[in-house]
Amino acid sequence: MTVSPSPPIEETWNLEDLFPTVESFQSARIDLEAEVAGLDRWRGRLTETPALLADALEAISAAWRRLARLRCYASLGSDVDIRVASRQTLKQQVELLSTALDAQTAYVRPELLAAPPQLLDDVLDAEPRLAPHAFFIRDLVRLRPHVLGPAEERLLASAGMMAASPTSLYQVLNNVDLPRPEVRLSDGSRVRLTPVEFHRRRTRRDREDRRRIFEGFYSAYEDFKDTLAHNLFAALKCHVFQARARGYPSCLAAALSHNNVPEVVYHRLIEQVHERLPLLHRYFRLRQRALNLDALEYHDLHGPLQASPSRRFETAAAKAAVLRAVLPLGPEYGDALARGFESRWIDWHPAPGKRSGAYATGWAYDVHPYVLINFKGEFENVSTLAHEMGHAMHSYFSNRHQPFASAGYSIFVAEVASTLNEALLARDMIERAADADERMFLVCRQLDGLRGTLFRQVLFAEFELALHRRTEAGDPVMAGELCSEYLELVRRYHGHDDGVVRVDERYGVEWAAVPHFYYEFYVYQYATGIVAAMALCEQILAHGQHAAGEYLDFLRAGGSAYPLELLQRTGVDLLERAPYEAAFAAMERLLDELEELIATRQPS
Image (cartoon, rainbow, N blue to C red; front, side, top):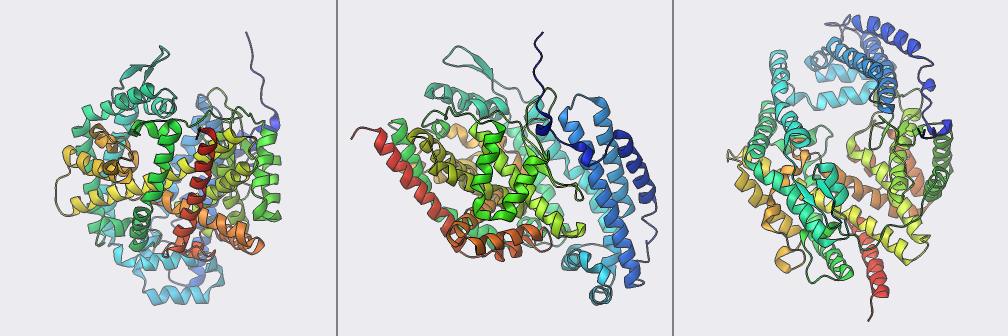
């Protein structure tokens, strides 16, 4: 029997930084359970004195801080090998403790909201120990008009159990029960078109294979489109109910209120992308030219323009590439990143039972971030490393400079830090490409990232807005209307009527394959994230140390202010046109370069 060599110890997590042993983890968990049991001792007394409120919020924050460390240890241990039942047990113990902590502290928000707003301002001024909790308290006051009385809040909480049903049902249908067709490919192999296999196989070079894969994959959704439409309508009605119950004028207003994002940001995003559709269409025409096709079909959008680079990366080379790419961010950032590489923050290699994919977590506030990847030595893995270490650096700087109460940041800004690292890596590697083929691969990857993360996500955002408006107006949302509305948008974005990309009518059902439509105005943040990251990239490369310093201040700020304000401090204001102009100017330069590369490969 052949035994695979174990990865070097420096390429696995050092969980001992969290807890030396499982026994010490269990001891800490039991101690926290005892503490949680007494966290309701301030119930009904929170606003008696500023000092008493500070005592309560400090104790509750400390409990969440300790829980986060426990959660990190249990989750990471589970993800190393999900087959080990004892590790799953630790994770479940922490989840139960989290539920208990939620329950014991649920009185805090209603009690604070029952107090007069002036009283809360007064206690913040009177008690310095409340400074770490000031943003939480003031944000709670902002939301006061949409918080109901205790009885109504309990009722809404109960309704929330039913509101989750459409999403849960979709996950079961999409990931387990939906029958998946099998197709035969040109090499004689057969493949069952699960979502994972679809995303892996749609980039095949053989055009007929791509057509079969697309048609086969979406046929499963066509067969169940009525069921999926009814289920999505149920989710939309839940969104409308929640928004109206809390007194919001629309579902969009309710969803954006959490991060205090004005609706104009959402509409500005759609407006700016509409204006730049000619750039997307130019990319499609260049694709058609490079692939030497008479016409570009929807299934051709993932056809590779050239082979992936044969270059392989060892972990040392991957670290060096990322460190070199982030040099414009300055020595403080680079030193912190190098420390992360050297200090076993990362579990690098695929292994039996290890969770797939990649992520970063900053839960361990008192320790350091942790990153999981499945590194196979390909360029995509290097890009993933840059992305996840962007998240890790965000948590590192936030946790070092913010109190625990304001260290956590929102998804609206989280994707900025990760995408900026990817953009810097791509710029650096394009400049250092070994040959024209590698350069074309890297340029196309950047353009495909813009197509998928900016244009496609805004298409989703526009479709989602139309669905919610239809539901708010009391109109039915049936499969036929969904397919027609989605097809119209896809054809507009892809220039179907102008002969840019032919989008067959069958792909109107693609909406049914998108789980994000159940998440209520979530996807637009991917698009704003990449716009902000590209604008920041341009600023940092153009203005050097000053712009890099502002960016580090953004990382250090964590969740201490609203996300739009945090970005505005860096000079990126998503209420204005400037960030979009910077992002699209960068895209235009990539298109110019691609056009030159294609011209050198084709006979005149």
